[in-house]
Length: 224
Image 1 (spheres, rainbow, N blue to C red):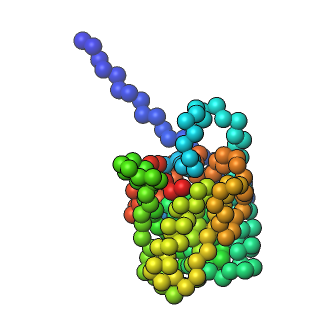
Image 2 (image 1 turned 90 degrees about the horizontal axis):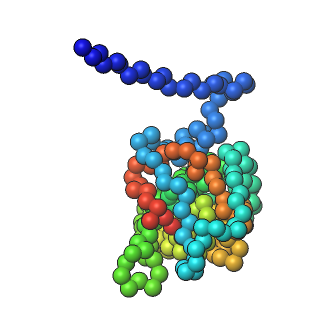
Image 3 (image 1 turned 180 degrees about the horizontal axis):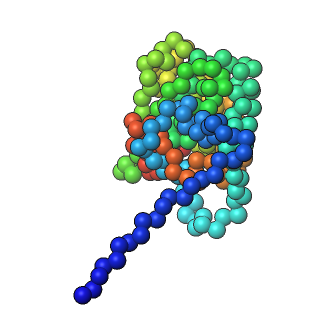
């Protein structure tokens, strides 16, 4: 009589805690905590829409790649926050999902003001549309406040321009924009940390991280 062997259960790997960091959360954990992201939502990788269709195969582009660690991300955010505070004192920061949630959340902490995550939807498949249509809405708590709208990467500026109009629509007193990365020759936000044409790989692009469950994060709906 044949005997069926039980499949051994593989124990999960145990991660070692680096010396000197006992009890201290990592920078990634601090960022995830400050933007209040629950653990049941997985983010899609960074998607940046091209400014125009070229009709050419872009898969073998000579475009350079710049990788950011969590420590480098923190330094860039702190530098950007100091630059912003010299000329603008926001009372609220709005982070555009998905990458803008990380950047905006970290900036709001550095600037000491309220943080609001929002989603701007991109519908690129609408028939007869001359350009992708964007839609979204802003929290009414922005009324009468100085607002900073934040995204991770800005190219065409469609997302930030729409977000600015929506914030003004709900009564924001003054609106400025900021991004961690801006493309030379593209839209120029009020504040930017890294003007570059390089493909920037953020620390949250490497692993599954979480986002506010109110958002349906879809690469096809990523802002421009």
